[in-house]
Length: 206
Image 1 (cartoon, rainbow, N blue to C red):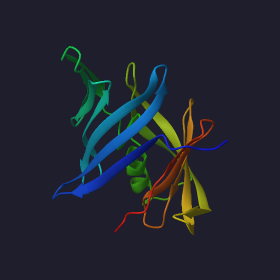
Image 2 (tube, one colour):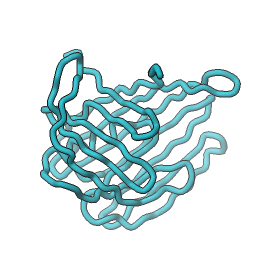
Image 3 (cartoon, rainbow, N blue to C red):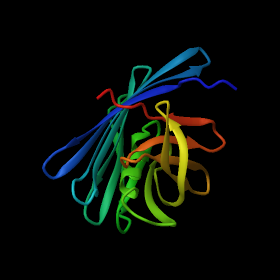
Image 4 (cartoon, rainbow, N blue to C red):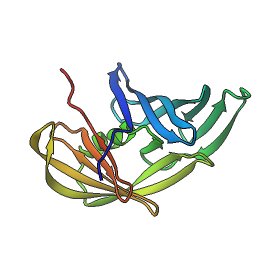
């Protein structure tokens, strides 16, 4: 089968005095019954500069002229996940107990969120470990754990050159992802088993 590009994601990390802000913009085209459907999604994540602790997250998905905004407000012992649609301008939120330790958020089409996890995990040594995740879903959001396994060094080609990367496996009961972390500590490739999905980072022009 020939692969084809489905989307592009442009992102940047903005460092302030006490926090790091990650900004993402995803443009995607999906085939629909009446032709191609354009999807535009913007996301903003803020974490602590020293501890990488999640402080806030928000994304806005635009499809067919309608917006869906998702977000997370984080407190010391709990957090609130909310959603607002442009159809009626009203929203709803659900409050959750905060998992112990550091936790991450995963949101559809925003693959830089895997990069955020990889940058943290690149600084630690482990064989296999659980990671707390908030999954933003079409239905009810879910707080869960996924298992991350260090598969060791793997030789890959990236940016038309050979590279030794650290390969990680992210797995839960429903899906498995493999991520490759380059020598500088960021994710250069992500693949989902059984779905044919492959995300490839392009080198920075700088």
